[in-house]
Image 1 (cartoon, rainbow, N blue to C red):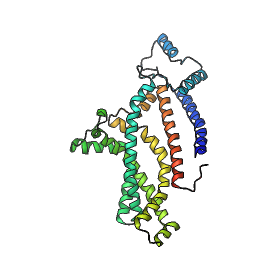
Image 2: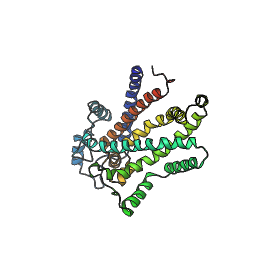
Image 3: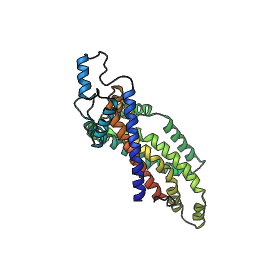
Image 4: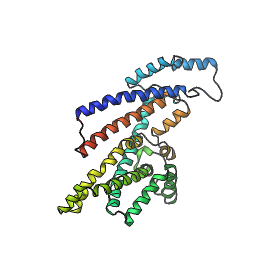
Amino acid sequence: MLRFILRRLATAIPTLFLVVTLSFLLMRLAPGGPFDLEQPLEATVMANLRRLYRLDQPLHEQYLTYLGALLRGDFGPSFYFRDFSIGELFAQGLPVSMRLGASALALALLIGLPLGALAAFRQNEGIDHAVIGIATAGITIPNFVVAPVLQIVFGLSLAWLPVGGWNGGAWRNTVLPIVTLALPQIAVIARLTRAAMIETLRANHIRTLRAQGLSGATVALHAMRASCLPVVSYLGPAAAGLLTGSVVVETIFGIPGIGRYFVEGALNRDYTLVMGTVVVVAVFVLAFNLMVDVLYALLDPRVRLD
């Protein structure tokens, strides 16, 4: 197991380096700059700003400077939010996005796995068709449609929950964004579980368990363990995407997470803000993929990690 983790880390470092390099080059090659305004600045002011943020240096020197700072854990100053560093912005927004994402993922697993298993055990029956229909709707209807509907129904019509705001993370303010984030994931997990469970229930070892007279609950537990493998494979990128925040959901509900920083950084050519967001997302993707590989091996003993 340790050798496997070390091997994966050895491949993750070059991958992260490649992501940082490509992102750095693409941001610099994109038209416009962080200080290009509708009313251009004076040449002296522009020169001073470029010198202050070291944008007057050759591209390779800028890259080496940024890479050295990144190795020290320094994401640099923000070009748009002038009073904050990227680390300070992430310290404020990342915990918010992580809380929302973790809650949405837990809710998706808690509902999606049982729904998929139930549909598989009742294949071609009414409950199966209902789960497939709901899952299809959950996948096809985008968040920017679901969120306003939930706000209108539960916030304005019924007045049960606030329509937006964070309020220090009060549970009433988190319900609607968590549900909005979780619904597509519930649909995907339910469909993956159903498909895998149907295939598993037809496997020889499940038929053997039934022939031995084991209870339906015991057979279901054995089938669920094998059926979780596709879901586990999906959880890596899904968890990274949820835990780093959703731009649409955070914007609609007015949540101060990390997602909005990526859009604002891209629109305002805030190089360090965009780069920092890309690095954080890449680290989460690599970390969760490693966790998924380890969990996959624990669920399926046939997979060897050494």
